[in-house]
Amino acid sequence: MLVHGGPATAVVRGPAGESVVLLAGDLPDALTDESVSELMELAAAVLDADELPLFRTCLRTLRRDGMRAGRRIEIDGAVLTVYEG
Image 1 (cartoon, one colour):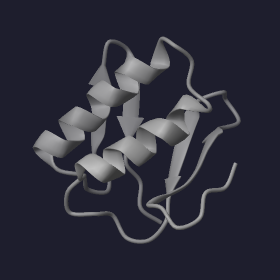
Image 2 (cartoon, one colour; image 1 turned 30 degrees about the horizontal axis):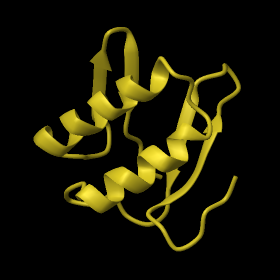
Image 3 (cartoon, one colour; image 1 turned 90 degrees about the vertical axis):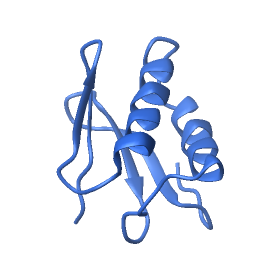
């Protein structure tokens, strides 16, 4: 799935079945309400009913603590890692 014109380029499953969100451009300094909504809409296409609330919780943590490369968040066994490349 490709989405043009938004901050997220794709949400896919990696080789081990993990969810991967690919962002276009540089990491934002902060996640806005609009960018979180767009990410949640994209994630809903790939994540299951148990994963989606965990992803939302991870995004709330990123909003609070900042989004930077190497940032790793673990909540209830779900891990979200931010990579920049």
